Length: 411
Image 1 (cartoon, rainbow, N blue to C red):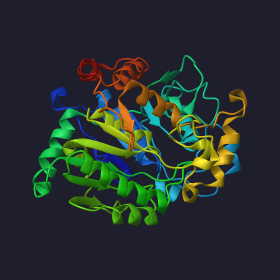
Image 2: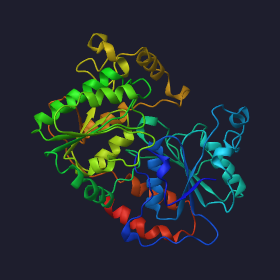
Image 3: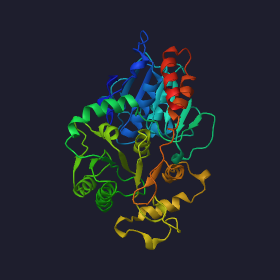
Image 4: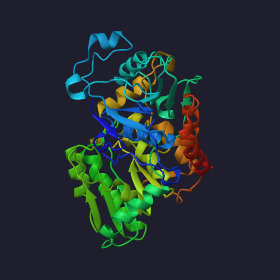
């Protein structure tokens, strides 16, 4: 089994190496057992949330990357606790001692988490970040956010935004690392965080070109300076070329690649005076907001599934579409979203989060003549989640010091 003891470099696009708050003191590993397993998946946003939660708990933890076969096993679809879909050759063995807690995401890891609990004799507690594929009644806790539209249930914790790993200490360290390397660029800095296509929202070459031009225009309106642009794992090659090709003036551009040796993402967040983020990634939006800097959202897509409501018609006037950004799947998605919610549990409506953040003044749409977003208090989602998770595991004294710090920071 490929295991990372406090070193999970391979699990995501951003810097996902587990860190500890220096004020929390050294971590001690319980004799003969790991306290927490984080089941990493292919989605780096989910991995960042899970590792962030594990770090905030303050317990020793291991990141275990679960690799599944491409073809779904019928056995995995029928049974709730099985490793039938796991690629054993690439993943390795899952062996005792079994953990007290498993934190996981991604629907194909549900079977794996249940299998681990079964091997432990029912002792292991299961915490899912995101949305369950099954009913999820047997999971100890589901940590979710508004766009997933889960029902109110005792084992579901509804947070305002996804969990993240952005802390003042990490931002300070990133600024110290990247500040000297970007010293030659004129201030102020506008960070541009680029995502990719998501569901009905197509981030194609046309949308990417528009982002490059609008980001440059916004920077000039705000007094000039430089753009700090980074793509991500979901940015297609064509979109990356388009957005980077549309950037003019002073800039530092980073194109994400799976074999990259360094990533300036955290440094950009730390050094930016303002941030532009594409609206497809709620995780990147949460991380941008955690810096407590002004944040602008870039909308793309079209039709009834548009991210940003158009004036008066709320995005329903087809004449207002940008023709080259429109995709038929937007209409299909709009039809899908009209189905009664009790009939489906697979919707992901990003607009629910966008509207809340815009209404609160925490973010504004790029291109709108709006006042600078207010830098209100950061939601105490992490502290609330730490309290709920710690209550699941008895005899957990290692959590207490860091949990108190997290709760104090959230006030």
